[in-house]
Image (cartoon, rainbow, N blue to C red):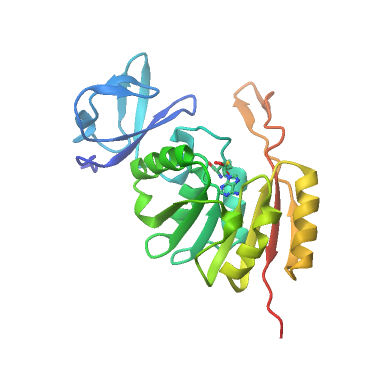
Length: 257
Ligand code: SAH
């Protein structure tokens, strides 16, 4: 027999057009963003992988992975997209048990990916200057079941990072160079650093600040992703393409010998 959704499970409702809505299978009729009125408790007992007719569409019921969580997130600030988030996890070796510091939280998209990767024993500490973003992101993380892995500080990361000996510091903020002294103090001797920067001028500035502080293995890259439209009559790259997100600058800390 197919496994069924249990009361309280997080469910990704997947539309054919790529839409994702995250819902917990609990609670009576309510307005759900992207779905209209739904009784989430009615999802309990349905099979994972089944299709549910709702409104004018058909939705498949999926156990959410990190891709569904990111796609279903309620966004406020510009989020770090999967092409960049996945590379950050890879380059910074973010894995189960790792301790990661991040700024700022924005809508919590990158935070979710970091928390997903460090679970169940690691920790993400995130610094965010805006209390409203911190609150919004906390709601997203709670819905996704990731909030327990994340410490949110409403503070300017440039003023200092309390953590020590962390495995990675990841900065998505306009002036990462101003947070580098704090980042260096927080990192373990050979810890990983990443700055996510939309502008070349930011890359130049963060790179010279990294060099001044003895960071090594400094490298900058840009990822270009092209979706394809696939039909029986023929396949081609889709007309719309994500033009630019940001440059990723990676480095490792070093200590004096
Ligand atoms: N990575 C996030 C998006 C971050 S947007 C995501 O994937 O959803 C950049 C965030 O950095 C904003 O929320 C902004 O308020 C915050 N920020 C900017 N300067 C900061 C600073 N000095 N310290 C902490 N947070 C900062």
